[in-house]
Image (cartoon, rainbow, N blue to C red; front, side):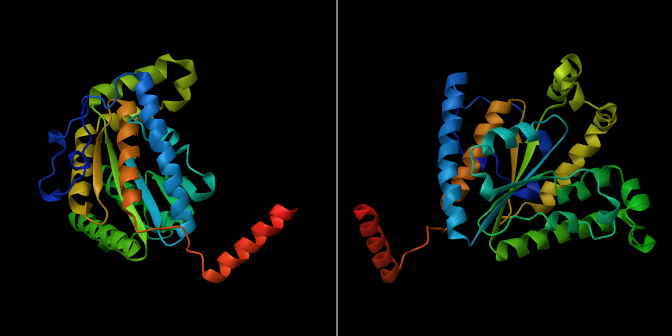
Length: 293
């Protein structure tokens, strides 16, 4: 069975990153379905305890960003990995086509409103990165719908460079204010996406997940891969790293993501609130009263 190393997935040298060099399928981290369930449950239990400490410490927050092509497993990963956390301290936000109100603001506005508070885990199912992914692939979204002054959209290359810089500055700002950021690209192969699309068509209970528009986006696969590669190269930093996760095996995705989150939560300098001598005396007095009751 394959041994786990975070360095296998973390983009530590973004300048040399190439998607084509990243595997979409690897040897599983589990022996069988029973072993998979046991490993995932153990990680979820640990993460539940760590999340409680994060919530009680109330100084940091954790932002998890998930990006991927359609059918790569974002929804199921979020569901299976984070269902064991205390819902009081977890907030999942999904970002689809921007509303008219959102288009009346800068491109970071709508996600800023959904950032986790101190003590919370915030999960973004898609994010502000859509602005350098789908908007870059379909740049008519930028030029025709985003209401930017025309002189700002004459040089599209400059637009993307500016947006990468805005994103890096934004993430640095969040880090300086206590928000830890982990970003996950679920790297599915085109063949596996095809199989999952076919299952959505062939299984009636999954029909609602499929849209004919998915096929149109699939035709643009090379452009999307280039957009992802450019975004990851431009924005993976030590303080807000990207992780490229092989996504042809959904069970492996869940174990890898759960382990990465577990490792980073363990390394956060957090603790349960310390009790003063005076408060300890009050606790002892309260205990004595309860024992007499």
